[in-house]
Amino acid sequence: DELLKAAGGAAATAAAAAAAANAAAPPPRLGLDGRDVSPSGEVLAPPEELEPMRVTISASYDQEALPQVGSTTNGGTPSGRARQTKAKAPKQQQQQAATPQQPQMPQPLLPMGGTQPADWSTAYAGGLCNPAMSPMPYGCFPPPAAMPPWMPGVYNPYMPAVYPPVPMMPPGMYGAVGMPMQAQLAQQLPMAPGMNKGAAMKSQGRQSDSKERRRRGGKKKKAARDRAASPTPVSEDDGNPDRSAALTEVRKQGGKCKLPFREVLPYILEFAQDHHGSRYLQTKLDEADAEDKQAVFDAIVPEANMMSSDVFGGFVVQKLFDIGTPEQRRRLAAGLRKNILRLSNEAVGCRVIQRAIQHASRESQVMIATELGKNVVDCISSMHGNHVIQKCIEQMPPDSVSFIIEAVEKDTERWASHMYGCRVIQRLLEHCASHQLQKILEHILKSIPKLAQDPYGNYVVQHMLEHGRKEDKKRIVSIIQDHVVDFAMHKCSSNVVEKCFEIATVGEHAYALDDERAKLMNTVLGTDDNPPLYQMMDNKFGNYIVQRMIEHSRGKERDLLHKRLLTVQQQLKSSVNGKHILSAMEKEFGVNQATM
Image: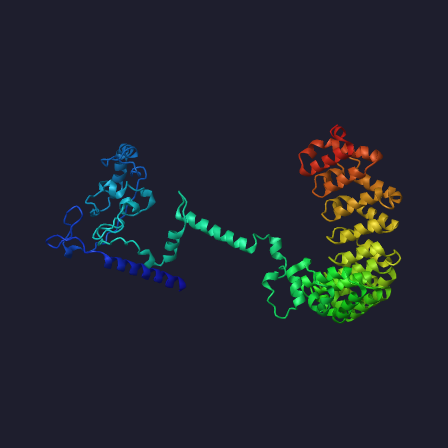
């Protein structure tokens, strides 16, 4: 319906414009007897005989036979391609003879008094048009630029001559058709020499876009658009009637403000929740005396929970943990007690709790651990809370984090494969004694094949190889050795294979892993002509294992590895992954040795 309405509106507009043009046209030229006369003086027909004829015209064009633009001589005789057409005339006549003849069509009169397009004067038609441009009658149009803008009483050459004359639209009519804005814009646009109106409009658009970008401060990168907006500029937000004069002064002068700190003390909460005020407080607290610091603590502690959730106030609370005395820190931590779990799972609050754990006394740490133990599972699985749990493991004594160990023991495999839980287990492996983690270690060892190929679990296995007991490392290396090719060609477990070669050569317990290391190396090098080494070297993950073997090989195994790789040197040169191996060979064996 909307499309029909739009089409009807357009048709109505065009009809109104044509009617206005006809109304403005002068009367046609008439002879003495009342009959219409053409510009050449010929009498066309009596008025009563000017009834429109309905003629169906069917025409086919020979692209080579029809003249091209500018291909006629001054006398109107076709040249070039037209002369070549005459030679083909007999063949065409034979084809026409075999085709049923079409009834002869009445030949209409043309506007300039002739019966063929070539009879039009060059001044009027400007040369014949290309017949391929349109299938209109006679196969061409006279170029619009060569026609008078308005020809009353003359047949329109765009239509067959049998229709009544339709005058051309006079200048200035485009405004009535509904395009005033485009016409006015085209008249106002500055145009360089050789520039058309379309190019001028595009240039104008680019200029306006450039001005808009300058007004906004230039183009923004995607990362900048995704970040939170910066604080409101001072010049745009200084009219707040509720803002104190002290904060207004700080916002105006920024870091150059010389306002005495004591004048700010009555407005501590207001300053702490303002971007510029928060920075001012953090800077002044470093150099403030004990009395001024105490005044700030007295103002912040009652509102510590609210301030710890504020994007700017949270930085002030963290600063107080940094510069406070043990007693002040204890009071501040006690003020957060009822909201520790909530704050631990917030983006701003989790940073405050981490700072409290870092600087609080042993007594305050126990209090925080007790509160977290009420729902430690939610904290481990939280994108913010897991950082608080990690900070507990790092800062608290091992016996204070038993609530975390107990929670992980209940579902070790799940937490080892969890995006945030794997981090917690890694911190436990780094900071807790093996006897505390006995159950966790056993659960991990039972799941080595699965965890090694897990996007998060493989990091837990690597940490066990780095921080675990000797017997745990031997067991892991043996498991990897049994299926070394499969593990080496997997995206995640290939990292575990690399770590096996590393810790067995230069790790803490490397001296106790000689047997496991030799078995692993021999398994890869093989004993036949197609060892597992050749399967790994052209794999996008396995080639890193080969590079690690080159780095950590020694003695006889080093010579065997070098020999194996030289045998397939040409294959390595033709492979992207192989070129990485050749680079490692040149680094370890030297250029001459690598190409020997």
